[in-house]
Structures are given as structure tokens and as C-alpha cells.
Length: 137
Image 1: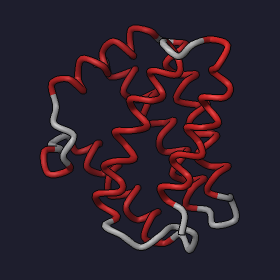
Image 2 (image 1 turned 90 degrees about the horizontal axis):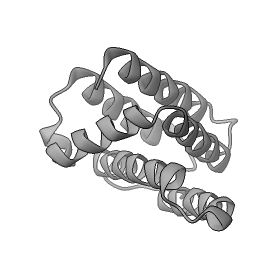
Image 3 (image 1 turned 60 degrees about the vertical axis):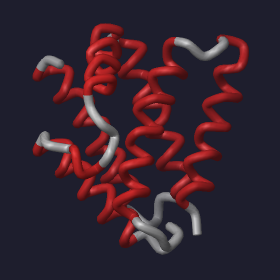
Image 4 (image 1 turned 90 degrees about the vertical axis):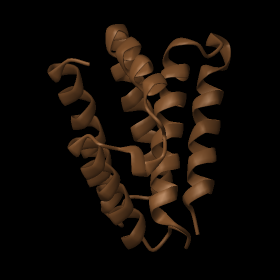
């Protein structure tokens, strides 16, 4: 997808990682903010959503298939956040980071464009709970 769209998405993800790296920010709050910010990006730019969806269909979700330097750097930053947060459970943080990225990518697009309207608020909150419980110690 375009350089501008990539930059916009990377800015959202970098801000989210900065928040999540702050141990004073509860993990649930950081995840909730990230979900809303990703949804806003998708809602504001349907072309970005189409480009991301097409890219995801072409790429393997496995961490060892990430070739893009920005994506690899992002994965490493997520791993570093998981490694240092005292409220994140033990586990394979590389695998957890890869799963978190895939789940966030798919669910944020779905919530922004395809979730049943009357249930969207509830589905967003359940997404936050899903991700928080996955990560929490």
C-alpha cells in the first residue's frame, strides 16, 4: 500500500507501543486505545483497508516470513514491550507478538467495516477483553 497510508498506520502503532511501554498505563487501557485508533484509521480510509486486506492475503502470518524492515522492527518493539511489562504473562513473546499483530489487524478491520452496527460497542469491549486476557499475567 502507499507510503502515506503505511506511514499513517505505523504512526498509530508506534504511539500505541509508546503507551504500552509505559508501565503506568494499564494494559487494558493501552489495548482499548489501540483498538479505537485502528478502527478510526480503517473508517477514515477504506482504500487503506482494502490494501491491507490484500497484503494480508498474500503474506504468511508467521513471524519468520516477515521481510519488511518496518514490520520486523515493529514486531521486535512489541516483543520488547511484552518482555518488560510486569503485568504480561510468561510465554513465547515472539509468538505472542505475532499473534497479537494478526488478531489486531483482522479484528480492527472487521470492527470498522463489517461488525453488526448495534453490537459494535460490545464487540469492541469484548475485543479489548480478549486481547487483555491473552496478555495479562
